[in-house]
Image (cartoon, rainbow, N blue to C red; front, side):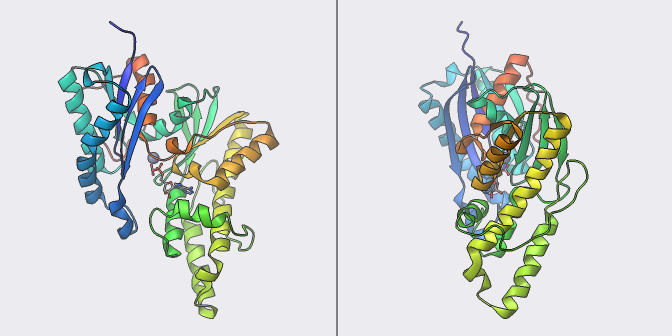
Amino acid sequence: MSNVINILAIESSCDETSAAVVSNGRVLSNHIATQKVHERYGGVVPELASRAHMQNIVPVVDAALKDAHLAKGDITAVAFTQSPGLLGSLLVGACFAKGFAQALQVPLIAVHHMQAHVLAHFIEQQPQFPFLCLTVSGGHTQIVLCRSHLDMEVLGETIDDAAGEAFDKVAKMLGLPYPGGPLVDKYAALGDPLRFKFPLSEMKDYQFSFSGLKTSVLYFMQAQKKTDPDFVANNLNDICASVQHTIIRMLMNKLTKAAKDLNIKHIGIAGGVSANSGLRKAITDAGIQHGWHTYIPRFEYCTDNAAMIGITGYYKYLQGTFTDLSIAPSPRATW
Ligand code: KG4
Ligand code: ZN
C-alpha cells in the first residue's frame, strides 16, 4: 500500500461550491464555483445557495479529481465543512462527502470552517507557533491564538457585525452590488483615507464591534445628501477609502494589542477580508514596525475554498480524528 494521503475536500458553507485534492499536505487542485445568482438580491439567499450547491457539487468534484490526475479509488479520506455556515448549504456538502466516503469505504473528516481559514496559511508557508491570526470574513472577525495546527483558541471576536459584513453593508448603502468588499477596496485605492472621519469603536480586550460604523456612515451620508444629492457619486473614492481606513484601524489596533500582550511575533491575516489590499499593506507595515514575521495567504486561499478544508483534513488525518456517518452539519459550533 502506498503512503500517500490523498484528501478530497469539500467546502459549501456559504455561496462558493469548492472541491480540492490535497496530497500529503500539498494542494493538487482547488476548484471554486462562485454562485452569481445572489448578485441581484444584494446578499446571499440561503435557499438559492443550497440549490446552486446541488447543481455545482458533482462537476466541481469531478474537475478537482481530473486536475489532480487522480481517480476516485486514489482518495484516502474525505474532508468537508461541518460548521459554521448556512445549514442548507452545509447539508449539501456534508451529504455528498458522507456518500462519497461510504461508497469508497474511506474515513470521513469534519472540518470547522474558521479553523480552516487559519490553516490556509500552512498550504504554502509554515508559520511558527505560537502563531496569532486575525481571521476576518463575511461572518466572523476573530483573533485566534494557535499553539499548534489543531490547538487554537479564539481570544476575542466581534460582538455584532463581522468586518466583511461592514464592508458589504456600507457598499450596499453606496449602491454597489454584492459582495461589496472587493469594490470598496477598488475605489478606496483611488481615494483619500483621511478625508472623512468615522468613530473607532472602543471595545474591551480583543473584542470588535462594527455595527456603530455602519450607522455612522448611514447618518453621515443622509446629512450630506441634503445639501448635495449627488454626494455619493461625487465622493465615492474618498468615502470608500475613509471607511476602509476606519475598519483597518479597528482591526489592526486589536491585533497589535494582542501581539504585544502575548509577546507573539508570528502574525497572519486570513478569511475573505484578508484579500483587502489596505489590510494586506497594514499588516506588512506593522510587521516592519514591530519586527513581526507576517503571513498573508494567496488571494485564492483568502476567500472560501476547499484547499483550506483539505489542509485541515490532512492535519486531522495525521492525528487520527475521524467522524462517523451520524455527524450532522451545524450552523454554529465552537471548535
Ligand atoms: O471568507 P469569505 O470568502 O466567506 C465567509 O466565510 O464569510 O469572506 C467573504 C467576505 C465578504 O464580506 C467580502 O465582501 C469580503 O470577504 N471581501 C473583501 C475583499 N474580498 C472579499 N472585503 C474587503 N476587501 C476585499 N478585497
Ligand atoms: Zn469563510
